[in-house]
Structure formats: C-alpha cells, structure tokens
Image 1 (cartoon, rainbow, N blue to C red):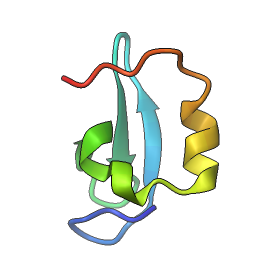
Image 2: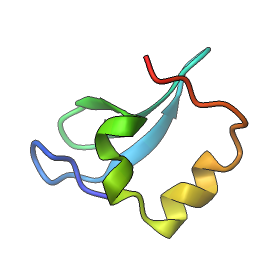
Image 3: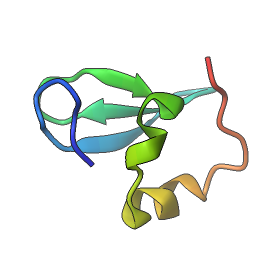
Length: 56
C-alpha cells in the first residue's frame, strides 16, 4: 500500500485502542476507512488479527 501524500509504504500501526496505517517515509497516519479501498491481501491478513477496528 502507498501513502496518499508521498507514495511511501504504509504499515499497520497498533495503538492501545486503535489500529491505524502509518507511512514509513513521511510518518502521516491514516484511519483505516481512509485507505480501505487500497487494502492489499498482505495488509488484510494483518488486519484480520484484530477482532474490532474502531473508526475514530
């Protein structure tokens, strides 16, 4: 997955009560729903580990 801002790679970032996507290049964070249309199979497998993803 690519960052919408700089085209860097997005990684799954797990916080205490939230799951976000963060760019490894520029550090911009995204809510899951902001990039849901871009999810690839690798990222979907990672997100499957979390039984609830809070859209905050």
